[in-house]
Length: 414
Ligand SMILES: NC(=O)c1ccc[n+]([C@@H]2O[C@H](COP(=O)([O-])OP(=O)(O)OC[C@H]3O[C@@H](n4cnc5c(N)ncnc54)[C@H](O)[C@@H]3O)[C@@H](O)[C@H]2O)c1
Image 1 (cartoon, protein in one colour):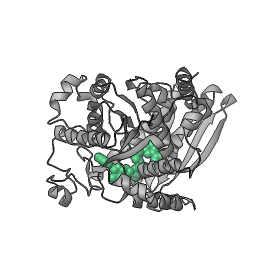
Image 2: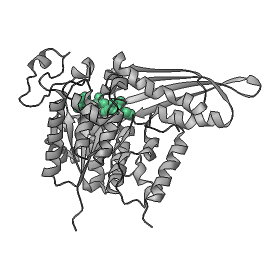
Image 3: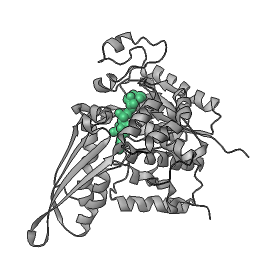
Image 4: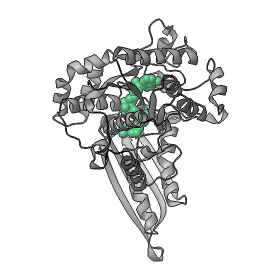
């Protein structure tokens, strides 16, 4: 029997994380790379009936016209790994094929900085004023119309490619923070407001996915599917979802190290983390409105793990010359026996998109498996992948990972 085909629909399909994930997937399909960095390839998950890499078909939404292969090559060069540009060359025709499936997204509710990146709009849309005045989103669609168009794009992909399921992953730019407290709690109350609601794009994509019964992963700190009315829609349509904000570098270190201080009864007096990087995500996060969402997502862990709130500071600075290489310097001041103050400092230097891309592929595989098994709604067993996992108070990486292992054991082949 032919193997089923599964869709991976990327929101922000030509960004650093997306193009690296696509390149990684193609390289895995061709056997050009090994499994380092992939959680779903760990022995603990080996008895899960996960889809094989060659079952995945990729498409997505984007707001920039640039060719996907150019972005993949840029990321490969920025990684400074001598082999990666050659991998892009070997995947050229597949990258072009995926590029032809990418559709123009929506900039509704994304704020000025992200709107200014956009140079690609849906055909027939009255976007002249958006192109000449970068402070305005494409004005011709209401949120309801945008949802209908995004939904059509995803459904057409599934039909044309004969897919059994589609997993939508939001890897688009971080939107400004959104106050969701005034949104209705029930889907039946939010749905009638879609003609005028000021929901950000990340939520419109989620609604489009859920209306089709497709699952949605929010790899960003944007609002996405987190409002309870949208979570309810997911459950009503039998879709899975989870987020938010992939835990890939400095925050991963925090969730490993803070439990050590807690378990040795060492009092953390202050924890300062300075992050510098130069990719497009860094450019967007340079806008204080967008940065707020990221800082909040990176900052809450320490207090959550320790049970008290030491002085913490998170800074994120954009230095274009660093490209995709992020440096985080963390200074942890703590009190030992007899109150003697001591210091731990660490420096994390990581290639941002190469840390994130394998997790995107893992999340897609695990979500598809959970959905195939009848799961709907949030997936708290995926908490270890996220900085701010929905509905999970536990922030210790080790304990979160134990939950993933327990879930895997419960769903493994004998
Ligand atoms: N290690 C990591 O790289 C990491 C870790 C955790 C979270 N994230 C988050 O993942 C997201 C992607 O990161 P990145 O480094 O790839 O950023 P990026 O800026 O390289 O890519 C974002 C892409 O999204 C596109 N985009 C923006 N708004 C859109 C919209 N409304 N619809 C469709 N496309 C849109 C942009 O054009 C761009 O191609 C960011 O929100 C980032 O904060 C990244």
